Amino acid sequence: MGYPIEGTALIRAPSNLGLRPLRPGHEPGTWRAPQVLTEAGLAARLAPARSVDLARPRYSTDPQPGTVLRNGPAIRRFNEQVAAAVDGALRDRLFPLVVGGDCSILIGALAGARRHSELALVHLDGHSDFRHPGNYEDFPLHSAAGMDLALAIGLGDPLMLRWDGAPDPLVPAERAIQIGEREGRDPDWGWEDIADTAITRIDMFELLERGVAEALNRSFAVLDRTPEMPFWVHLDVDILDQAVMPAVDSPGSPGLDYAGLAALLRGFVAAPRCLGLTITIYDPDLDRDGAYARGLVGMLADGLAPLTGTRRRP
Image (tube, rainbow, N blue to C red; front, side, top):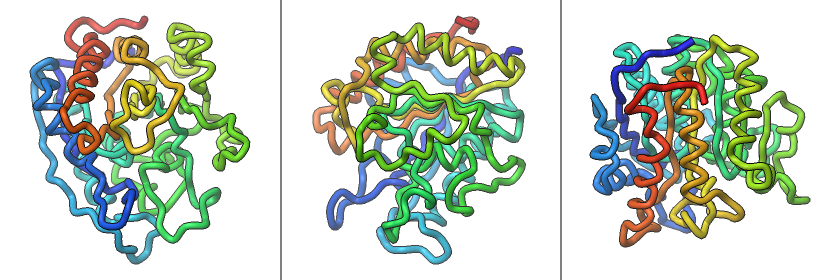
């Protein structure tokens, strides 16, 4: 089943609420990413039919009542705005391209998309982002940006699980695919309970060994179990190798290069069932001369080229 689009809606979501401060007094710079990427040519390259600018939310390091999430109530309010923007884009037959910001914006995007249809999720990330209170209980405050995949399948703080017009969970585990995680083979890895879920996992080592084409084939074998169902793609740019993209909260190696990530994106976005995309975690504060912003924009223009033409299943 195809979902005809008549253009792209560029939704700029300048959030850093889901990230921890790296030092006392620090405020993560991901909130600047939408504007910096726009200035580096993203809007000019993609020529969106609509641009939506959400207001920057206030960041705080103080505990909030009734939640274990840092900035929990503010994350909730901001994600309600993201959900409304995604909902509006889909109603107008536009492809929502949500540019953050930190990974917590995924939840609002899914909530908005779920007002239209059941949904699968392709989660492209150098980390599993599967922290939840069941495996991460030793800290008084939790960072939602490391929890987005768990929240998407219904695990985590209740503040982020229930949304108007959308079911809980937003995505059943058996319809979620995690690609690119690089830490799961470490002996001291703390989120091994993801292996007890029905999430399909292709880690970075398998991705690099077998290649992008095989990862796409395996992913579509899962997605095609429900061939009428659309899917959402989430991209955390720390899936790129830190030699290519160090301007992120938690860089690492091994990882993809720009060409590999562009090919992976093209494969998913070319499918008519691809309903929307979130892009997160680029931090301009770690990119003083803008070189990484320009490289990222070039990669995105390549990877999202199917949005400007006829979309087909690869």
